[in-house]
Image (tube, rainbow, N blue to C red):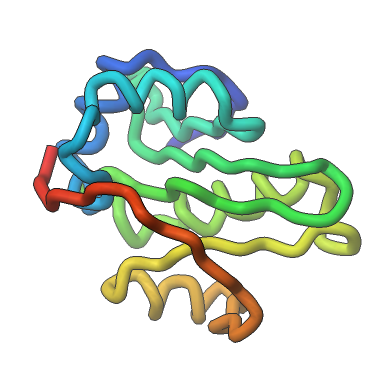
Length: 142
């Protein structure tokens, strides 16, 4: 069993979690240690899925205006807990926290391996998203 709670994560707990998920390869090496605390402090939606022992087994972080849209920056599940509905439950909880499916459009950048999951929960590829990206990006895995 697990429970989903809205909470701010510590940098250490989140970095430890990243090592147990595929999210550990989504960040650039550049200033990783100083940028993660900013992410954790500033997201407007911060959901944690925890098992009965309190272990962090799932995370959803997102930005929202609570009126029209939710941008999911991070959605991950511990590899030992995949395929148990945790990712789906996190998305549902985030959508409700942001304002509900009647008012909120959800956007995210999906890792190629995650596209089947997002399609399975009803998401579609968007053609109306623009990007401005001039940051340094050295790939690494946490």
